[in-house]
Image (cartoon, rainbow, N blue to C red; front, side):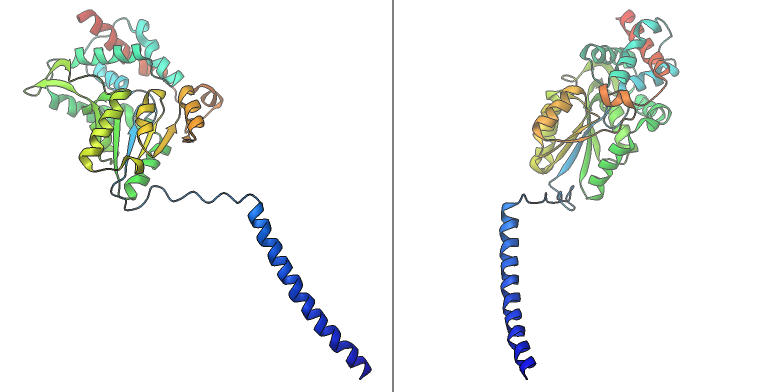
Length: 306
């Protein structure tokens, strides 16, 4: 009995102390969770499935596709003898620069636009649209960035519309959008009369601030809430468009856009490979000289014909 009497109080005392210990531990845990930095919450699901007031806007050149669509189009026209081969070396560096530096040079792009307008003048719109389908298969299909394509598909799978927004001719942009299964495209509009190109533009090239205005106008027409939309681009020239939306992404960014994106805490994605790509934005692709050849010829001859 003496032994039992000794054990009984101890058992009661241990139980009381256990309760006290448990309460103290719980209180300490509560205080610790309040004082310690909280774990970063998981990123909310994006794009939001079923949000029909959201859409995505993708720049084309070097964002969706390696290189410039206009240059690839020029190469295809060269192959079809829309112009002859002259002075290639003088102008080959223009496409090489775009592919190597991964940035848009305004003078180079202006030359390309002037060239395209000169070349297509007098041709029927339907003819160029048909040729655009062929050129996509020949020169563009293999240059689509799989990572960017997956981002676009995520928006489509969420039930959202996806638009290309580019300074390239709208006919080319629409071909690319259709072949990728996207909703449509905003692009530079070349003037035509009775289905024939006049060699002039309607307004100005869809570049820089003009892209932002196009996206804003489309959002109004489509009833979109831009704060719920996303935009994707590689170029600092598209900061106005990226700044319009609630979800801006810098894709394969040039140096200025990368810096701006970090300052603004925008999301970054880089699908280029290789050491130099990480430093200066060189697309991991070969055949610079071959791609430059036809487009350079276009630029040279368009200048001679003007």
